[in-house]
Length: 344
Ligand code: FES
Image (cartoon, rainbow, N blue to C red):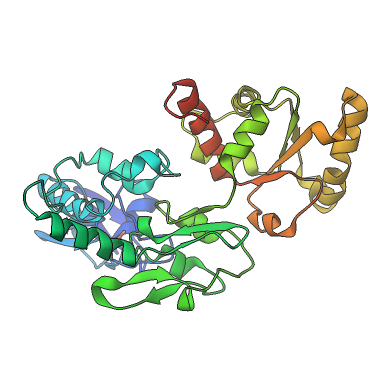
């Protein structure tokens, strides 16, 4: 099939969506719920114009001869209104959010300059009794869960995009309650119990699902001059970290950042080490204790890896296991601490 996007001709394949063709041809369309293989059409941020009508691009299949426009005043207005609706629930939460500066919704809100909150009542528009009832009602549906070892859940930040529902290979997420009270969660809100592949955390656009870790403890250990901190980078993790941190694309920049964070030693595991990973990790503390002539108790090991399920395994040779997202968060928090914006 042949179609036009922004007045340029493109060839398409059967069953492709507008979003898919655009992604393939590097034409940027924003979106919070659509992913490569899932097209939900719930956030409605991905609207484009076709034949003078607005339609969601992630779940609209290509038809012969379509003429699509991906950017116009009309499209921006529609995206802005849809973002404002989502943002109405989020306003004021960023300052204390784990994903501040790493959140997809926040990035879009900045890009589309969401400053006017048409859907948030202004001072004087509600009585204090109504305000209190609203806050109580909002909180009555918030579910937080930190009892599982790997994934921290907080429905306060959920935008109901359904990415976690779609991506979970074990189908652990679904919808609880009905209509306006709908909350994404586990059946009967039980503690999440799965293989902890981490895919749900990877695709969550906000801080509804994040990695489980005590960040202040990590930062304190890194800053403690009596401790010798070793970062063990899993193979292929550098590329994943580059995706998370702006302006870093080279191994040497990553190393510099890790040293700036307080790591004394960086060990890169290679693909050939895959099967010997546990054995290598097991010997690190004793090897460095001998080499640096320090007490092994003062050595802290940080395994930076996407295998977040390892957090559940309690490996005595690893003090912390951090995902690429957490490594990015460390960089962000360190920068903020240097600027004096957060204190520990
Ligand atoms: S990305 Fe298409 S509606 Fe959300």
